[in-house]
Length: 130
Image 1 (cartoon, rainbow, N blue to C red):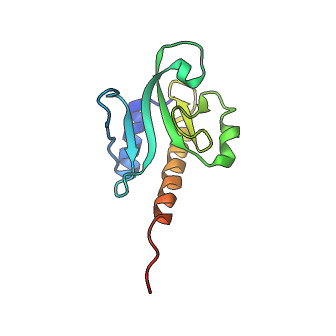
Image 2: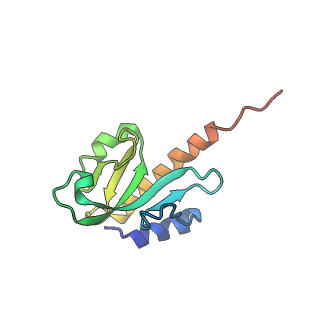
């Protein structure tokens, strides 16, 4: 299990990233962005259980991350990993932070999301002119 605080500490230590809180209506939604491009690689949200397809409406913390589409279906078979809330379900997933997923596994998924979104940023650079 990994807490919201532990996720933010990991991102700060690993990538020197501070979260962005862009919505007044959802003050606990922490967006994790690349420094230069500002492209998202993750989001920490507090949502009701039903938003993850669970029974109930208790507020829970979830981490939304981009994932390799080839891994998504097998990862969703793991307890605590769900289709992405409010994101493209083919490329993103939701992790219920109160689930028994190990800190190491979550950090590995954060790193994958960071790398996947970084490569998209690199591809977007214009070609040099001759």
